[in-house]
Length: 70
Image (cartoon, rainbow, N blue to C red):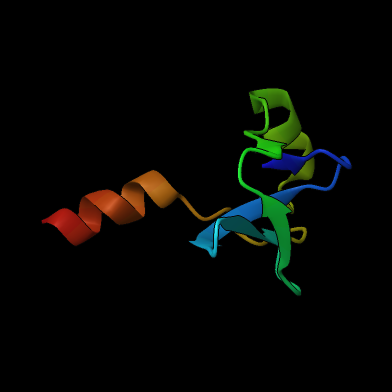
């Protein structure tokens, strides 16, 4: 999500009518008014996601979901 101030974060929950967002990669949550953030575009998602360290395999979330459902 991108809030109205341009900060990127992952949606965590709705509490008291506010959305809680957490910085991508972790950190302290912050509140925004409900509707005061928008989903990141696919381009923004690619740019904002932390990249694995050199030589570290990239985690495949879709494969993890398939394994859990078996």
